[in-house]
Image (tube, rainbow, N blue to C red; front, side):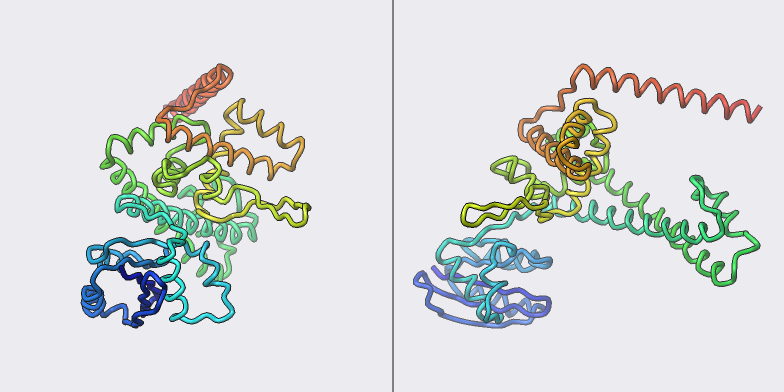
Length: 366
């Protein structure tokens, strides 16, 4: 058996082949665009296993080489610190280190989502990017409006934006900037709507098990359509985590710790892993605290000992652990009697508000 380490870059790949005794047998370098030469060379290797790091663009290479190899491993780049922190670092040495670790069976593996999970992540992450762009444009428009004392809560209604555009006291520079901002704002709104529609279409094609997972997540307090899609896309298969601590660590919500000579120091959360999942859980935590007596009690108890920011992070960590447990067990969230009563009261209040708004609207039309 031959063991192949592949150092993948945007334009080139560097390959090192070793045997079980970690003796270097071959080295090679290819241009990424020369797929024919790559597949032909690997096809002549005979029986081999290969390893490649989980970079942004590894998928195309794996799709070509997987049918030719006996086995392969996706290496976790964050755990291969021996490469990143080496004093002597070259592409050849990186490929060789990967090959030697593969021969020793010591490669820290990364999770590879399946095809549907990868498509789901692309859509969810693109929607997040579109929403961030929309939020940035809103801030820019609000800043411009505030310089004319024209910023208010209803600013982004079409008639209010048009009123801002038609102000006579706008300078020529502000007219130009505002016109471009509003054009970008309209396009950003359309992108968000289109991405939401595409996500709904994608979700409708999911399997029964996937639909069941969505129902399970939506039953929890603080979890809406956006958060549920982020959790499903970023976690992938919840069963892949050996413990709930691993799942929360994947979101970077666990605190770090340093200890030496019996002296320890607690640190802030690691912030390693999925940044989008971490953001979604913090948003869900705030919503749960506002709408659930149980989670509000958890937040208040922690807040007495810690600051409010640390308290909400702790709630986010616990809420994610609950969601993962629900997915692994296939059970929906069990509301307490206080939560159910609070939920009923909140729904009734919203109905009264809608009826009152409808009555005002009908009176205005009459």
